Length: 269
Length: 217
Ligand SMILES: Nc1ncnc2c1ncn2[C@@H]1O[C@H](COP(=O)(O)OP(=O)(O)OP(=O)(O)O)[C@@H](O)[C@H]1O
Ligand SMILES: [Mg+2]
Image (cartoon, rainbow over all chains, first blue to last red; front, side, top):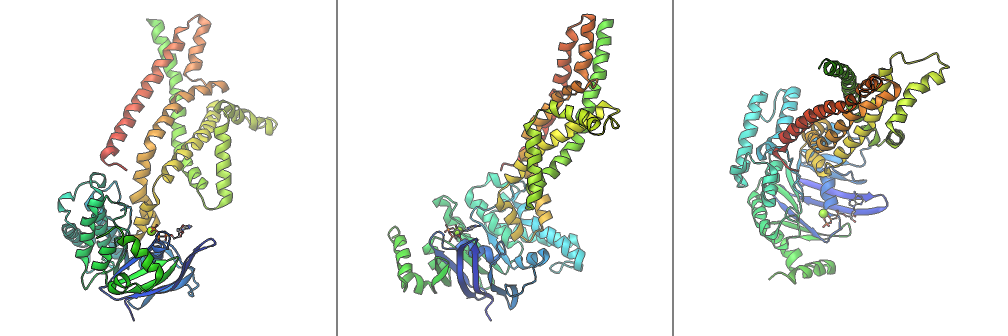
């Protein structure tokens, strides 16, 4: 059984069917890039995976445990949805940092709240036995993440004083602070000036390891080719083509994939 | 000089009533306004409709008319068996209702101005709805509503003199009494009291705004 299994996802808004029948799998440590034209449903798919939208049909499971199943008719409690969300991290196109908190506070806010709750419930959080101990390790980890994204010296700045690229790197570190199983990116560089996309893409590239599993929705085709283990091309709410970068980008079989990619190749090289 | 002091004393006594009305109105209208704003954003349609119609009626009619309604309608409806023993109580009720409606719109504007991405960022970080409200959204709302709130609260200071239409002994009513003795200047003198009070409030709000100025967005 694959690490992430997404089966037969259907999602419609009112009468418009946005995701028609999406299934794919991902192994631990793999990077999946999702490409496709505007309106094809990429964002909606990521939002379903993060439980920001509820699909009408389908099954989502991580590491063998089923997180979502439309057949399971009992309405999920908020607490359960929250628990399921923690398997995933999400980096948004618009960063969505909390403006009133410093960079460092943005990183530690959610982990601290979670630690408090877990310690009250189970007397334990990721090995820490007391809240104080947990906060110490949360802080240490946050410092380390800031270093990884190259922003240690911005620790005490407010987001409004950072460039877009820096804000997005903070958002990545914030998502990592909860140690998600799978980190999702929705067009992480689309809101950035072209000269700032490189620094964010490099950070994402540097995260690639046997431990971190990632799904990246992107319009940066060459980045997808370099970093992804697997590429999905979406069109009109279906997976039109999927495979390795060699298969999908170098040798696309479907005419729609070919048409989509040729529009990109016109401008690159 | 003696005259000046006795006028000042009279006006101060009147202004005490204005301050009382001001304080009580704030105390009740601020939380009530929040409830109304939550109602008017509710997904439960009937509640939302009731709140919106309420706000429309209150904002669409003069406060002076509302003062008359609160003071005169209950005795009329009860054939005189109910009457406000204290005119101030009637004034307070009218002011609280009126200002709660205005405040609710300010709250609603502030809450609706928070981008959805702030909530979603909280959700994907595993936060609960109440954690998101108190830890993420609330301060941003407060920062946004301080300018319109300070405007409205300063208007309230001056509006309290409207209570004289149901004969509450507020400052302007007291000042008017002096005209019978041929003294006009006490009426203009009242302006100093309002200016001073509003000046202090302005400084207070500017202080709060500065406090929240450490971040943008
Ligand atoms: N909340 C919603 N209500 C109604 N329709 C929606 C909603 N969210 C998305 N849609 C529709 O679903 C379709 C797919 O949208 P989605 O944002 O998933 O596309 P996308 O592939 O991410 O596009 P882009 O590349 O522009 O980001 C669009 O036609 C959009 O109008
Ligand atoms: Mg999108």
